[in-house]
Length: 617
Image 1 (cartoon, rainbow, N blue to C red):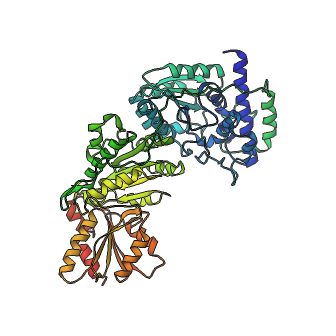
Image 2: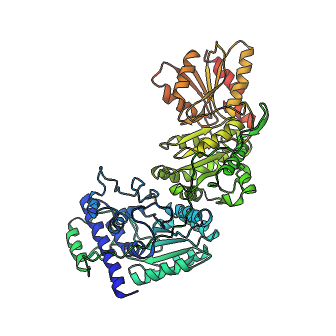
Image 3: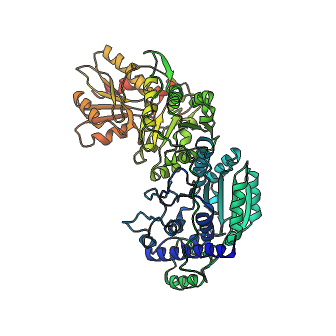
């Protein structure tokens, strides 16, 4: 490459620095020093290495870029502006209420795939993108993920390194901006580049140590990464925070601060470094148009449910059946699991379509992140499954997934005390509360095999995060195979004209409620039983109507802690109504024991329901 071309990229890097200083100064906040350390990397990536169509930032054929160190958003915005996507004058609206150029990037912007800023998550998402490109799109686009050195201490990052190395994702290039300084202290390894290199090599990466401010070295490193086959690459860029900022470079206590009174002096200095300030930026390479056209709409079960009323089957097993059926209907349905596939029954898909099942091992944060990455740009329909209790480890990934506008279906099995002897560490008793707190999340709680298969089908066609809660013990089939289910619609499964109380339940407790209702009827007390089906959105109209017909009394029964579950979901919709509600829930940390014994011990079994009704009327 000629010296003229190298100088052009150096000029771009300094333009990006200028934009970062100007925009953060105008905003009065931001991270200009964190932008400065990675400016040369961004220049080489966006104007030499990556192949993409500027006017279509999310085109299927484009190379992907994830800025995991999301606090450096100003330089990412500057790169797209310099590429010509929007006027550079827009950069001065950084962090303003009326602007989508927020403090950390979100997909409100058409060039952002995922929200970042909760550090450590970007590489998992990039792994999902790269896996999709290699195995499903079978396209030459590459995925790049830029991280900070402080961020690289996150466990989520090393889960992702492990995944990428194991699956030999040679279309993935990770970059660590080793600028030595964290927010309040130096990063643990400082500039010990050999320590970074040895760690990455041990995880199956081809690692390249470079001077992160040497454009020529960066070009050669990215070329080497693209030519490296059979393993992913990590470029370890030794950089300095605040590079080319006189009196600020490599100094502590400048993280997350605009440069204030120093801004003018620093901008003037940066302008002196521009050799051809008015020259055009280097031409951006065009992508190779080979990614397939994908349609993920209108997914259906390949065959309808086929069960007999009264038969018993665990809803987790019905999930595996439903998963295979929708995968047979659409070749973009994929499943991920965290080494629980023989318990969640996602193994069913692996048996018949092994290429459509991804084992993510016992790394729940990475499991969630890879799923989010696979779902980007609507390339796949993703189902992520493991024990529901372990999903708490991935909550922050799902929280960020909401901001990312992701479409991921999460299946949590082995919920509640009904798992029995394995004990409280394995009992998900807070999962409904967790997923209810996510804006826009749809929560299914099917009670039998028929409703479970239909929940899988509905989830596959629903935007946003969906959560399907399935149980370990077998439950009786209560629905005919042709029953129609809908999001936000509960189903009354038992009623008379003289019902005294409306019982609302889901999963195993619905079965106990039905048993209790039959026994109560024998003693002359009629109750109505409602299957909640979706905990979010909850069926406000149906609940109020049926409660009114049952003396304005509701009893909720759930295999969950009282905070945030079915009872609270119902309470939300009746809070302005003249309706009384009693909640039966697990009110203490449980212990090991036989499943049905535990249901009674913790106040959610058949007898507990009977007692609850009798105390209510």
